[in-house]
Amino acid sequence: MKKIVGLSLAIGAASMLFASDVAQNLANEKCGSCHLMGEITKEKLDNMKAPPYWAIAKKAKERYENEEDKIKYIIDYALEPSEEKMLFPKETKEKFGVMPSLKDKVTKEEIRIISTYILEKRF
Ligand code: HEC
Image 1 (cartoon, rainbow, N blue to C red):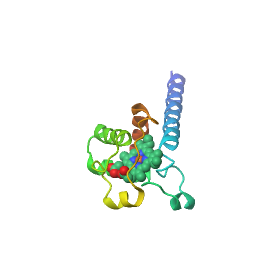
Image 2: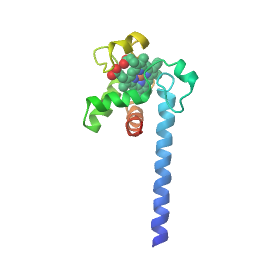
Image 3: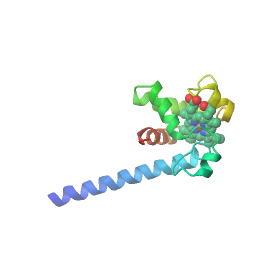
Image 4: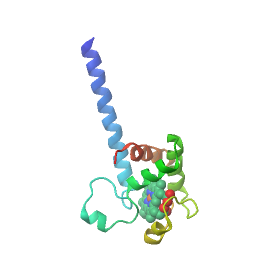
């Protein structure tokens, strides 16, 4: 019995690892060309095209209490960004411009996975 429990725990942990790998790759692929993701290097910092992902998570957490609201905000913004919706201050727009819509490049479901990953990561 012990063995079976141990084995299912191991499988559970492995699939969780796998899930976060998928999320990380997706975030890198779809958002990482602009938002700083993963390992921070000087080169990446010098070439920043948008606020880093932890700044997005911070904004979402400051603005929304409910987990689902935070995710909805990220999904909605990535598909339909606009100056009016921006939580980042004016200086962000002056520095980087408003984000282009990713409507044709990423699905709602993919952004949901990315959002959960971004929000769960510890900064
Ligand atoms: C082509 C570059 C680019 C890509 C790719 C990109 N972003 Fe952005 N994003 C920006 C810029 C620039 C800003 C800052 C200006 C703004 O807020 O619109 C931004 C801001 C944001 C914000 C904060 C908006 C606010 O001001 O409240 C969210 C949320 C966001 N991005 C989510 C995403 C997600 C999720 C992805 C990947 C699916 C993504 N972005 C991919 C350029 C990009």
